[in-house]
Length: 295
Image 1 (cartoon, helix red, strand yellow):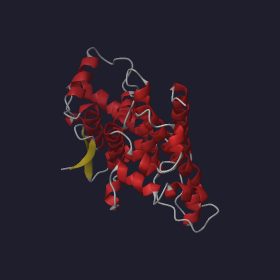
Image 2 (tube, one colour; image 1 turned 90 degrees about the horizontal axis):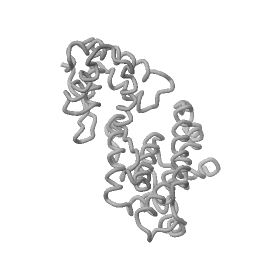
Image 3 (tube, one colour; image 1 turned 60 degrees about the vertical axis):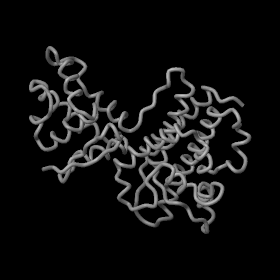
Image 4 (cartoon, one colour; image 1 turned 180 degrees about the horizontal axis):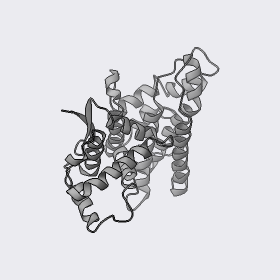
C-alpha cells in the first residue's frame, strides 16, 4: 500500500482531535493511582497508537523497503523503540527539537529521571520487549499484574506531532507547515497584534522591536511579557512610542493565555512568565528555554 495524502489527512486530524480531547478533559490527580490510570487510559492508548502509526507512515515514506506488512510484524509491531531507531538521523533530530522545547519549558529535567531526550522517553514508554509498555497499558483495566510505565500525555502528544510534521514535509513539495512549540507560541502571540495600526509607522516600529532581540520574535515577546509582569514596560527594547501598544498587547496575551481554552503548553508558558523569582528567557540558537535572575 502506498502512503498518500489521504492517509495523512486522517492521521493529522486524529492528532489534532486527540490534543483537543486531552485539553478538554484534564486528569484529576487525586485518589487511588488506579483511578488516575483509568482516567488516563483512553488518552494514553490513543497516543501510543498514534505515535506507532505515525512512525510507520514516516518509515514507509523514507525507505521503499519498508511496507506496512513488514512494519506490522516483529521486530516492529508495537515496538516504538525499534520503529524510532530506524528513522533517518534528520528525522530523529527534528523529533528531538520538538521534544527539547517542550521538556525544557515544563522543566521535566528537574525530576531526575533516567532520560532527558526523545529517544530516552520513547524507550521508557516502550518498556521491555516488543512494545511491552503499550500492551501493558492496553490491558491494565483487566489485568492487575501488569506494570504500566509512567508517562505524560502532553509529552507523548508532542512526539506524535513532531512525527506528523516530518510526514507533512515529505508529502509536500514545499516542505509543509511544521511548528514546534516555540513557533506555535509566536503564532499565538502574533495574533494579538492590532489589525489596524494605532499610529503612522506602527508596522515599522514593530519590525524594529522584533529585530532588536538576538533571539528573534519569541525573545522579543518574552522581553515584553516578563517586564510587563514587573510593571517595567518602559524598559523594553523598543521605540518609545511603541511601548504603550506593547503594554496593551502584553495585557491581551495574559488574558488570552489565562483562558480555560488555552492549551497546557500556553498555560505553562504563562506560569513561567509570571514567576517573580526569575525571568524566563529563550535561546533561538539552541532552541532552549532558560532563566535569568530578576535582579
